[in-house]
Image 1 (cartoon, rainbow over the protein chains, first blue to last red):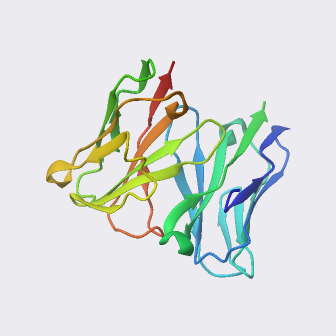
Image 2 (image 1 turned 90 degrees about the horizontal axis):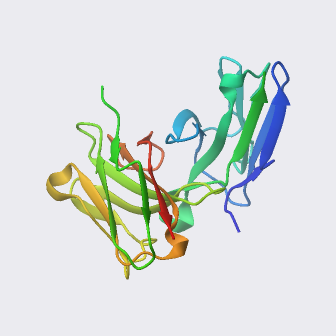
Length: 112
Length: 115
């Protein structure tokens, strides 16, 4: 059982469409991070959200942290092929000594 | 600024053989992490170093895995003997500060296939 459940596991869309991926947990997190990982590369940090209800925007990407700090979402507007990759959420899990714990990821494919 | 370097990028071995991975973190980063990423899953922390001391190795299978960070810079991760289930990408990451809320900078990983 993953501490951080990501959904969907896989998403294939056409260029120009919008998409939302979700990261859910039964535990409260002090912060959550979103990473993007491209094939053959390591994850790259996109954003860190800290405050419940917080919304952060990074160009066409909008990140939201749930009010109760148990969930987060990533919304991409007008997706482009360059958005293709594995999107991972991660957060420090208190019961595991605040070790950074990753979700299983959502694989996004944006077709031209 | 150079990123985290890892080598080799790919390795294929047979079960029961030994293998070693090398990581050179970003200059000045005191904290170094090794993660295991099995296909279709997120990375799982194996071990965390702060300078040359181990901070957390609770998820490292110590009967077969070992890691060291001599002089607080480069690090090596060794598997001896390898099992089929060790097939994964091994990621090294570094951070200027300790603490999971801080940004970690990842290397490209070493893809290990155990036959």
